[in-house]
Image (tube, rainbow, N blue to C red; front, side, top):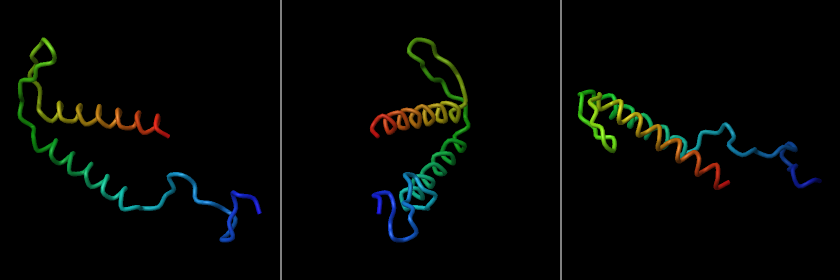
Length: 81
């Protein structure tokens, strides 16, 4: 038998299969909670971006920060593997 086959049908479970794992449920729950938090904070607020000060809805700033954080996390996870 080759190393890639097993006795239970000849296939191995690939990386990132479709199974629902506790980690995926927790990540999904945290993402939903983050979105609820973001969209509950809709007031306009002043934000300083290095030098200029801009006024924008707080949800926009929170969502942009979350997207930047997710992109950084994805980049480092891809680089790690």
